[in-house]
Image (cartoon, rainbow, N blue to C red; front, side):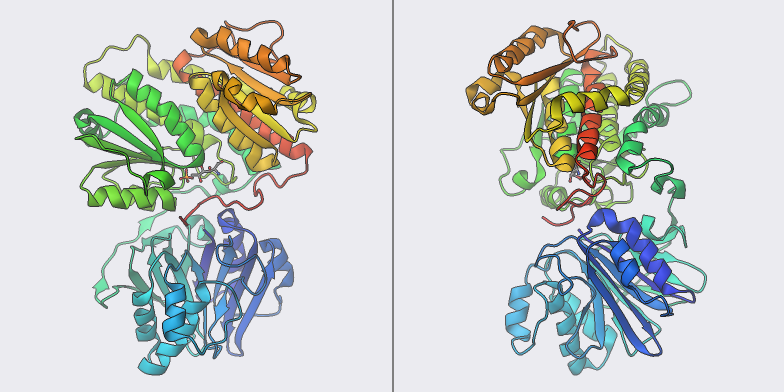
Length: 600
Ligand code: M6R
């Protein structure tokens, strides 16, 4: 994880770096730092904590025309000023920021740096000391940089300053995201275009194992062997207002509210003027050719995959499996003869998913990525991409990306069904439009959700979410939302499974939230609720119009039974939001987490 930004130009570097880091804070926020070079030398500022603290600490009188910055999510070493980036070489000449994990840093340390004094516990410090060392041999910064980069194993996005050179930033990338932004008389480097949208919308993609020399007036991309790469820039199509909170107190609330709009956008983007689905023909053929779909994802995206499996099996009549990427990577199941891998990832940068993608590509299998970031690593490296059209999701807790993933998975399954000539007994796009309206009704009922929090979750230490069939999958997502932002220990269970062990945890007042949106298990889940009430639980049922009972705490508007996850998740997102709000938690930046998980 971690976010990096670099600037070389004519303007005040400080503002570009600090603004950029504020936009990258979603990538990590336990410590931060910037280094700026001017005629008086290098100015280094590091703090434990957030960018706001760094802003307060940076000396405002310093003016510089080049610099690098970093916001950290700790991997090696605790969050502290010593472990915060930028890190400096022993001589003080080289200073760098790094996002990623250097897997062979211990070996490199032993082999080349046994006589060097380290000041941090990070893997990063090895890189900068090594550059110092190899500079002694080559007396050329670019060459020393290249030689060191060639020695690194693992993931990295690196930006480095040589204090004796005010004209170049040295940049390299492998597995961790990194872009170069192009301007008139200046250039920037960032983990994400969002960081530097204020200064440019022109970007150059950097591929793995490439080195970039970034000057004020030119950018040179090279492969590790020194050959120069000719690459055309692209225009980043991100609306700057999408990355602002506007009048909302938190990005999470804004993003929950955006779900009806995103669902309607998906309907529009995936239909032509005759209201026919318009998916890339290659995707259609790949789906048709597959004898089994392997869905690979993490966290919330994995939960969306569980819902998607149902669509693919029930609508497209293709067997599907859903796997947590970090497990699949090291414990691959027996594969079918003609598998198609579907990667679901909001960011398109999740290292666990990418590790699977790399492996299955080596095995020669086709891959489709469903992502919110079309130019992302998972998108670039897969054969096909489906876009979520959700707009940037900034809050660490994923909300609109989850419902967008489910909506796109429905469309994928329906398209495949149509291509296979299978008849559906409902109009899926019409039903998705009804879903968007239902979401709007729900997002308008925030007071009711806040009241449920007061009645059920106010003083809770733990909570259980129970459901059956599709509701079970949504319960897993509801529990993840609650624990992630409110720190209430929460689990999502299949209703029938409680009595096989977990019911032992139910005590007087334990909150149990049950979903009842599936007709054929309506009575079964209500029976499970009675079982926990009999043991003292403070239980509530969220049901769907048409199967509600008087005692239900909340009734959802009716939608097609297959699409209920798109709707039933909304109250659970809002419950998590208000539970966290009442506890005074940092909703958009929960502790220990980061939005984009680019380490395995
Ligand atoms: O970007 P991705 O969808 O690949 O991210 C996967 C998970 O890290 C992510 O969904 C995570 O679980 C969310 N923060 C949960 O709200």
